[in-house]
Length: 192
Image (cartoon, rainbow, N blue to C red; front, side, top):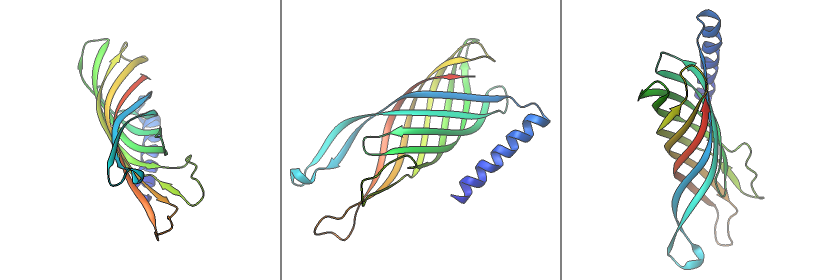
């Protein structure tokens, strides 16, 4: 946690210094979309059998950073992911890189890695949800003139960890779940 806070402080101070000293260009990429996946879990009411369900969740994120060169930008990604039983807020370091394309259409790569918190999640009495590590690589397409706002569509893989402490049942001393959300994310957004 201290390392993440130190990294964010260092990034913000370098961005503010860079904008006054060298005229660095600010970049914003805001997206919303869905997280899609299949989940396999044990169902205690069905004997020892596993159950598999399709899950769809809502995701929103914003990337704010600086343009390092013509193709590369780096910054911080803030988001909110609404899973069925958890509301997680990832904070990550991220990069966006323009891979190829013509003047008005660009293919770009994206990578975000960080940690999610459960700041806005409300647990029932006796339960405690904590976030965990997150990684989100992918590709996308940007449509718009260079240097002005562009519409984006991105397809990424999102891996998000979480730890949930639950109320123990009558024969247990402790009860918890270590969850790993593996999702395919499809997002629409705007970039400038």
